[in-house]
Amino acid sequence: MTTTTLAGIDVELNDEGFLVEPSQWTEAMAVDLARKEGIDPLTDEHWKVVHFMRSEYLAKGSGPSVRVLGKTSGVTIKELYQLFPKGPAKTAAKIAGIPKPKGCI
Amino acid sequence: MNEPIEKVSIIISKGSLEGVYPGLIMANGARAEGIEANLFFTFFGMEAILKNRQSHIKVATVGNPGLHMASVVGALPGMSALATHMMEQKMDKLDIPSIPEFVEMISDTGCGIYACQASVDLFGLKKDGFIEQVQDIITVGEFYAKAAGGEIIFT
Image 1 (cartoon, rainbow over the protein chains, first blue to last red):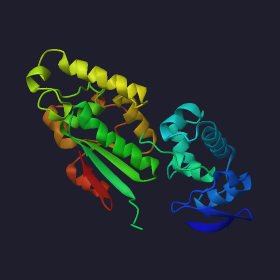
Image 2: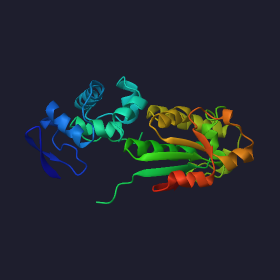
Image 3: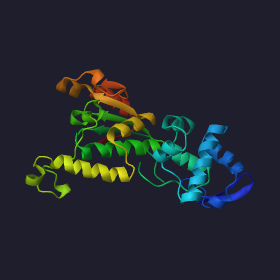
Image 4: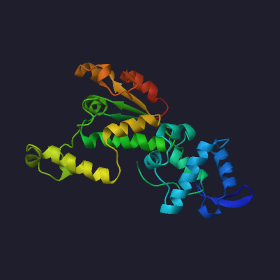
């Protein structure tokens, strides 16, 4: 666990870099989190996925796995991996300030 | 903290449902973690990448003690089809994709998909028998070159 400053606010990140307290998240933080993941700038397509991940988490208690993301976000698996080369569900979840989605598929 | 795994090359050598899925799940899971991945299909594993075979892969019901079904029962006509059907229904409820859909999805994640040259020769196969996601037919030496610097998993 580390404490760091994102968009001017002190937050705690877990060992994998995920926000410990999702409620602290702001859109400005997403830009900082994305930069840490090597994504700069965040395009509209990136934001579409990030917003989708966050709204799924708030509605269902967990972000979607890659497969569900590909089927329901309106962005294809190919595009998702182009936007987030290091794993779309994992990276978009981190940028969206939600916990890493569980699930094997 | 341990060094994260950066690349994994997975060999699929078996042609049963339960012989194919673990490798596919490992490959998909690797890509979801941002790990570079390759899939190498050899021997009966090639059933999963052949156009006319990949929708017909069955659960082995003979000599499969993990299934908790006596082989004499498993050998009866229709048992393999029944076990496969039941397994596929459960997988569908869990949103686990079918083998053709799964291989296509894994290819879309940027995983390398390769067939084994020696097995292609052995079974007298042709390139056009494979699904379009197969990038190349390679030798074991070429596989080792592609796997270099990463982990190798044999299934």
